[in-house]
Length: 101
Image 1 (cartoon, rainbow, N blue to C red):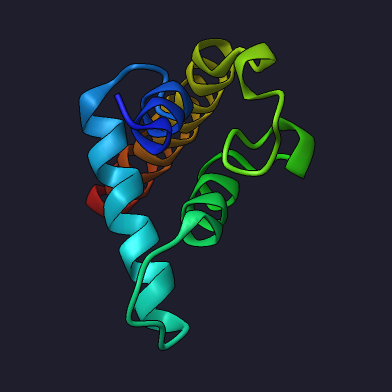
Image 2: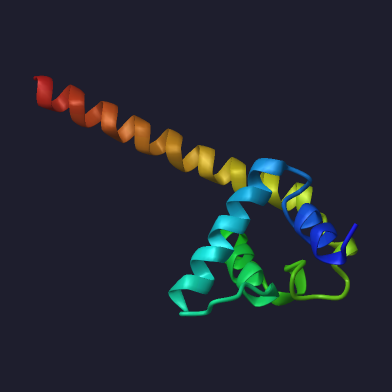
């Protein structure tokens, strides 16, 4: 398997859907910068936007990528997003209840 695919799969915590999302985000990064070709920097930017991590914890930026536990990091981020969504849903329900009074 080409090295890039190994990095992408590892960075996406072995989740195909997340790998596709990161690819789309990297394409968006390239397009927003006016680049006609995608490179590792675009994927590194996409990973940073998703994970908000230092370069040392970005699999696209470090040579020590295999030491990064991307599964735990991804689970943490997904859990945070679920919590944010839950809070937003609660706020919406409260606003609806207030408006219905």
